[in-house]
Image 1 (cartoon, rainbow, N blue to C red):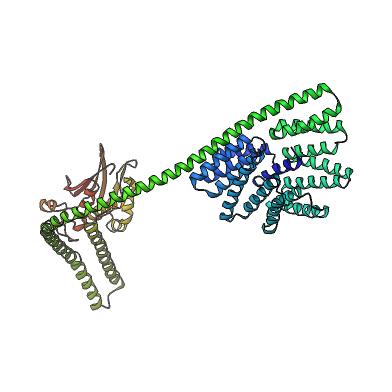
Image 2: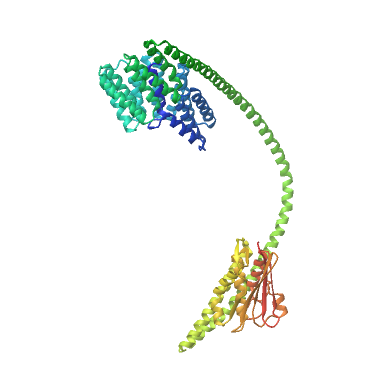
Length: 618
């Protein structure tokens, strides 16, 4: 393998791994590990493309495999850049194998894709790779013109350092001053991007220039420091190349040249750079022949023959894989054309079927219309009847609402007005009397506000229903909260509240609905309880249900009141013992919506007991 060919191979890897100081083997292992955790298809395609390029100097079969796999997935995923990158990987493998025309075709396809994507960095890279192919084909004029095109149009990014390096290596007509100029460009750009590979490549160019100028001492010193730098960063491929430079440096000293040639071979063998083994062994053989040691010559020849046989087998396998790949590509193209034709036929048949279906639907629609008018007449009569029922129900609802408003607000308002008139007619009332008047007005206003809020909730319930919001409730805490709300009423009448519900009993139900019931039952009991009495809140659990009872020490109720207590037609006065008004009717509706029931009875001795049962879980 010639020096220029080896350098071209090296530079083809750089666009996929520049700005990285890891060795190629480390990069491969890191990428394979990363591939295990990639989830989305785009990242997966990018990763296997990168693996393909990393492998192409070590194992062209693996490189071809990853390139073909990436292209297949990218085509299915409709990912143009992934497909172009895969073409770049496959083209690089074909270039290494000497299949220049095929390589040129794929590089050209990749270039067109990058241009369509306006990917300037990859456009420069693809153009550079095409230039390298032309140089390998012997068309120096075309190759150098493409390099100059990239130099003129390329942006100042990391890829330009590679362009300058390849241009220097491929243009033997460059003057020493021109080489120095381009080397300064290479170092300037590579330093910005910390691209140690290209920096080492520029030093290899400088080594060649020093040898050309006869400055061998400086050349050897530079070569030694550059080799140390390559070893420091773990750049195995660079180290192999630099050991080859050592062999060239000592070409007039066969023993030293042979020593470095063997080192070069052993490193390439150890690191798996199989494509370099045969040209390196040829160097080993040429210097071994100068030594005149027949046994050593035979040993190297045997080793070279074994490597050539192995490489020949790999080449056969590669050609076979590539032929299979091309066959699959051709089959895919044919299959795509067949599928396209089939899709056209299917669309035509679907169109005919759709037209037929529309005709059938049109005929069926005419038939349906002929029957629709008859059904509409029947339904119209039914709707009229239903609307009459709704209107009647609305009238009844409005009548009840007016009755409620008249009953619940007329008496309190009249009483409040009479108090106000009394205050107006007695301006000389004492402070104590005025405070009593104010207190009475405040209590009347609070009562009317409470009644108004109750009626609004009832109307909302009747018109739109109530959505359950089930949650786990501690029943003891519910009555404690309700007691806090009615505390003023309890304190005014010095009533004691005994909450005997066990604190561990819970139910899954709607808190707001239950609290509405609890507050009304407590307020009702307070209203009819004598001063200084006790209200007892009890609880029993039976299977999957819980019964809550509120017992007061009031006068109790007669049978007629009990029978109509929870109906909307019951009396709604707030100052009589006849019924508890609309609130109790709402309590009944709420409890029924929660899956329970509510009732009332007189206590054994005196007072009334209001009870309700709800399920443990609605």
